[in-house]
Length: 124
Image 1 (cartoon, helix red, strand yellow):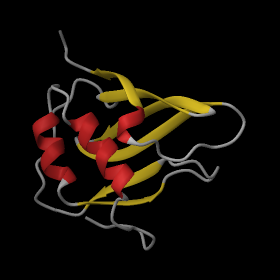
Image 2: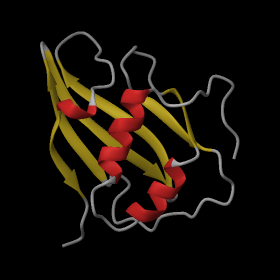
Image 3: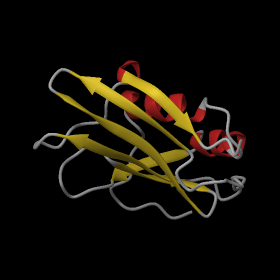
């Protein structure tokens, strides 16, 4: 699968956040975990926040059958900032870790230890 020229390996924080979201039990999580083994990141937003686009590099990666294209999310809080990080998929593939935050300044990717209130689409 093609990746943009600015694609790079995930940072430690990005990889930890993705792993924590994918550790949740939801339909398609197994396939997304397999995709995460071969994924690159690229800037996902022009505002300067920590949102990243995800690019699965394995052309044979299994596509997930998901109930929701936003299968997992978590709140985060750190000194002076807070918000939500949401896993976004498209056509059964990892697509983005999207940040939404409160406050005026864009926020970087939170650390996994700062994530709370994990949510996933269970279909139940």
